[in-house]
Image 1 (cartoon, rainbow, N blue to C red):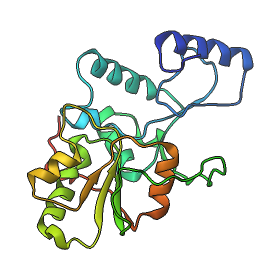
Image 2: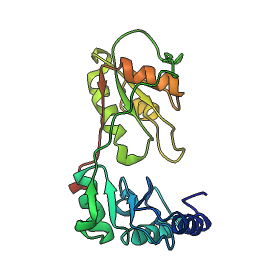
Image 3: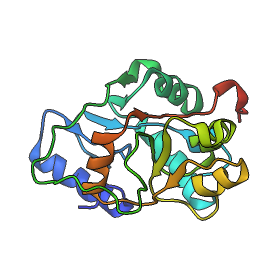
Image 4: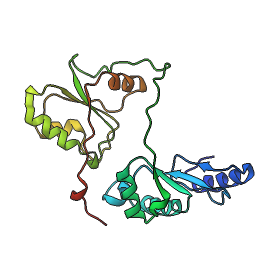
Amino acid sequence: IAPMSPQGLVAAGRLIRELKPDVYFSPFYFLPVGAGAPCVVTAHDVFPLRLHYGLAGWKRVLYRMMLRRAGHARFVLTSSDFSRREIGVLTGIGTDRLRVVRLGVPPVRAAVTPARPAALPGDGPFALVIGLNYPYKNLETLARAWGAMGDSAPLRLVAAGREHREYPGLGALAARHGATRVTALGSVSEAELEWLYGNATLLLFPAWLLWHLPMF
């Protein structure tokens, strides 16, 4: 059953009615149709409702509809107090239904042998940033910082993650701000990601300040 398709929501609801569980938990915010049991769903964030990109057209309409349906779940789980506030403000889901459950750290997987990315230059220490290049990831702030330090930056800045063609990647941002000690790896394998996490000096999480964002 594909739990994030309209047909899948109906099929999931049918299966839950047959199984009669005490509770149904979903790692997604899609609420099954006619489950007949308490449902707990997950919404990590609602940034497409806050920002002017990420989802457009019918996808944005469907996103709003599914979040509205999620409000009928027994609980909606999210991973931070910030996301709990955002979900409550932007969807109208009651705060009594929104619960914060912190993200865990998975154990080291013995089946994955760390592999150093071939495109990573040198053997020196580096700071790591992971994820897509959407503007809300605020990679430009890192490019500015490394540009200000120039060749004297104590750490190489390394980015790993798929890049969306509509937005500049870290390499382009670094060129814009004159940052030289910067490497954008793009998508990496699980083995390479394991190596990067294990060998990075710093893990960076740049983010936009909330009061710079418009409410709509």
